[in-house]
Each structure stands twice: as structure tokens, then as C-alpha cells.
Image (cartoon, rainbow, N blue to C red; front, side, top):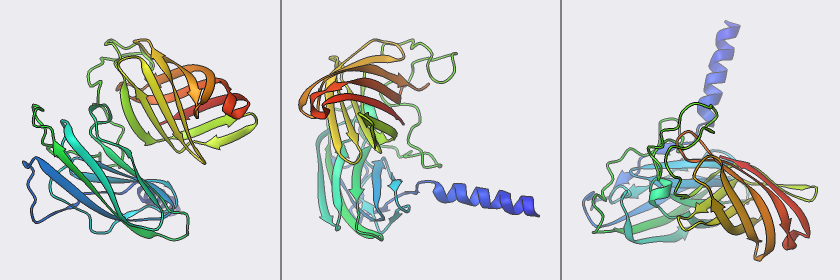
Length: 286
């Protein structure tokens, strides 16, 4: 009996810690084939969460505080997966900070992310609108749904590198059979940026590795740190270097590791930056 109670408690705790996923209601003018679409998202958030919209599903990814919940969200169609001629964000209400941190693109599986930060204690209602015009030149731009996995995870396969044919090696570090062409993705992460002897937690990371070899990284923690430089290589890991950190000259080198689906797994880097007056080290994983 004691074992059963312990097992039940462990399972209940696991379920409770999963990030909520829900499907917004359909608006009166719901039309999945229309060129123009919009979602009015109404959620209740405690402390800090990312609101991720993909297809006809919304994931409330909890960064700190209690899990968020839907408060009457509705959409006129699923978020398309095939390109936009227009994409816009509009904040409507909520006492904290609300901002769009990722527009949907091929490299991030057509996922829009809005970051909400509420530091005043207790949960708060937030309302914002995402609107778009699908690209009429896209071969197929209407989403068929799908959304996030049932566990609340958005780190599945697909994206910009759906068929890399990775094999062997374990740990997602096998050589890549196809040439890596980069990605642009923002996601919740864990890790630190060490400056001198001080560690700053990194709760979210944007990695933008463009096909022309330019690279940009944005680390979200106690402060937002932006870095730019170059990336090179066609295997796993990918070599990266930065020459600018926070607007000041820098010299840093490291490696970006991919998982078995060819998506971001972790970033390791160290170097010197004028802004911090010395050494910095970064160790961040998805």
C-alpha cells in the first residue's frame, strides 16, 4: 500500500509539472482557408512564462512560478505553416512585461512565442493579439493542426533539418550526413553565463545561425545579452565565434551541439568582452 501511494504521488507530481497545452476556441468568423488570421490569447500567468502558438495549439511554458492557464483564448484559424507577408503582435492588457520574442519561421517549426514576465506576486490575466496574412506564393500555407506533443514538449523533430540521417554515436553527436544550413529558434533553456566569478542564470535563448555564416545569440536572464559573430562547419558540433557582446568588442569561441533531429542541444563558449572587463563563459542547453 505504501509503495502504491508513493508511486501515485510520483505520477501526480510528474503530471502537475507538465506545461499546459490547450486548443483555443474558434471565433465566429473561423475560416482555416482565409488569407488573414488572428488569435486573441487570454491567459493567467504567475511570475514568468512563454506562450507558444503553433498550428491550433498553445503551450504555456513555465519558466518560474506556478503553471499558467487558459482564460478564454480564441482564434480565427490555426497559425499557418508556410510563410507570411505580414505578422503582427499587439498587447491589450496585463500589469507586467509582455513582448513577442519569436516570429514563426521555417527554422522554428512555425512557432510564435510571446514572453510574459510578472513580478508583482500572484497570477494576473493577460490579453494580447497575434495577427497575420499568409503568403499567397507559398505552395501550402494552411496548417493542418498537429501542434505540440501531448507531454507539453515542443522539441520534436522536423524544422529546417527534417532528414539528416544521423546514426550511431549516441547523445546526438554523430556526424551529420547532410550539410547543416542553420536555423533561427527561441526556446526555454537552462544554464549559466559566468562573468568573472559571478554566474547569471539563462532561462531563454535565441540562436540564429544564418545561411550566409553570420550568427546571433540572445541570452535572457537577469539581463538580456546579445552577441553576434560567425558560425562554420557542416557537422556536429558547429564551430561558433563572437566579436560583439552587448554592443562592445569581444573575442569568444565555442561550439554549438545538435541533437539527433538536427536541432539545438547546447552551446558552450568562452572568451573576453570589454563590456564585462574580462573573461566570460557560457554553458547553456535546451
